[in-house]
Length: 244
Image (cartoon, rainbow, N blue to C red):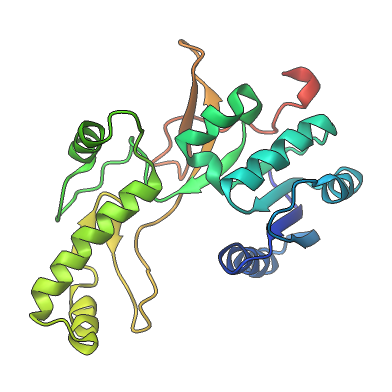
């Protein structure tokens, strides 16, 4: 599938708005037509106006940039209003909680992440992926590790190395140490690499999709891109609600 017309809705808060702006810039660079670019305020529970516009516009792809509760509510209302789009992207669908919150209604949604249990970087500092998962489950037996917990762990590992390299805690020493270590550390979330402004250039993202395991029928979040990291082929176009 090659999308040409994209609709995007986003939560009017700094982090989602920054992501939305980055999407908008990328679409322009790729020659995609942004047919809807609409923000909604924090606390919104009725997404009918936005979704009715999406339904009437009939884009090839729909991206919702918000946090998990808003995204889950958005998807529930897409089902209620019978809004069908070939490609739907909601970043927090990559979290295990997504499947718990939505069950089979959460199927087929695409997301992205910097960490997945199936990805094994050649880690230079801290635990490798299997060990990280084992240690996490031992510490938190009732929870599943996700990209947020992996990022937090990886950040702790990097911060420890920066402090040791700096030999001091003042801001300039820490910054220079952080720059010297750029490109020399790989954690569970991939390579650490930053520029002079501190922007992360490493830790590449992967695209995920919620799918049903063909054998067990359990819901899983699988990596579908890039090809060298993919554990399953993407299911696209997404089946319409009345065909599920």
